[in-house]
Length: 344
Image (tube, rainbow, N blue to C red; front, top):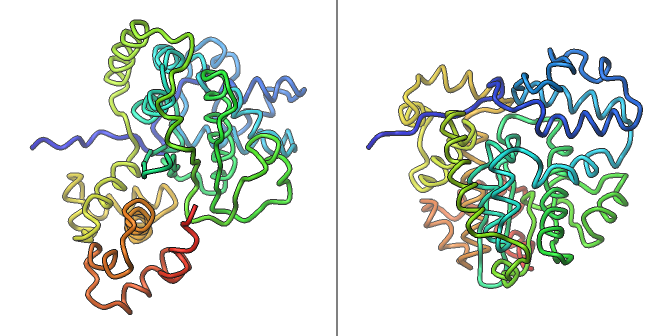
């Protein structure tokens, strides 16, 4: 079977400067920030971005975010940026998103076209009997900028779905970081029931909202836009990041717990190259392995409702004590505490 070894990395230049980066630039300009100061150190020039000639790497985008945060010095910057992000004016992918007939279609459009619509974070959707969960993963080594990007991305989904559905949808947002000092911005933009210190950076909504028909959507226009979007992705040359591809491989093989050597062989690169690429993204193989196995454990608890013993067996732990230690390392919690935290 042919492997798809195409991916983007933190230094891949593929993000059109006049798309999402321009949303942040315009926000800063509207608040009186000088464009030269805003772009200092990024290797970018405003005239080139305005002319539509510039493509950014995620690293350059993070540099722009860092400058904007420092110069704006405002707690609402990420949330106001998020309100501008989706559907956006990013060609056929935005057109397809704008013509979504249901929430499920809209979320699937963002997920399948994440290289175009969410290049810095990977959204993933899972369902149980009562809820839909949209959780977010770092695509490119956001590190210190992860909180800003999470705030913007969740705001983007909440704002977009409210506009397209014509109603205020009952999203509940959860963040893995502690409650920040500017929590009132979360209340204003994401809702007063926003949660902190969670196991996942996640949004949830009652499952019934996934299939409610949205007004003003055109199935024909959406079909054409999706075809054009596929052609756009083929031109870009990839649809996911290296960290995303590695996460899927490690998650799908969580029971076998692949080694660094096996993972490198899967991606047709050497162990040293894989280690170097992960280091470039501010991470290492064991951290990615632990993340994937943690998420499988949470899925088995939350979605499948399995017992501690069954989860341990699924992850190929024969010794309950070893499983408890592993789960404590992944989550900071014992199995019983995890089950309590995951009750909605």
